[in-house]
Image (tube, rainbow, N blue to C red; front, side, top):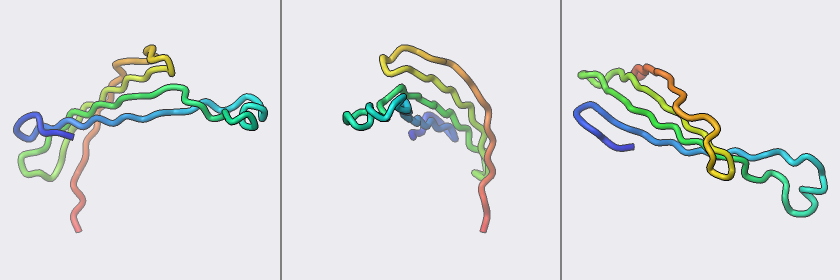
Length: 85
């Protein structure tokens, strides 16, 4: 993550998924759970003035194994509150 301004942050998460083998021979031949694609989740976070809560906008882009877009621009909103002990 990085700070992008006063009380503003950005976090980037990358993840990968695999494709299940369709037959046992693929596993026996040394293949099997091969890469099927990846995704990038970008989170833009705004921290409250007192630092006890935040709100964020998340944007998800997914791509197949050949880097072709599967879905891009999906968005969500999130809020968080700091846990106190």
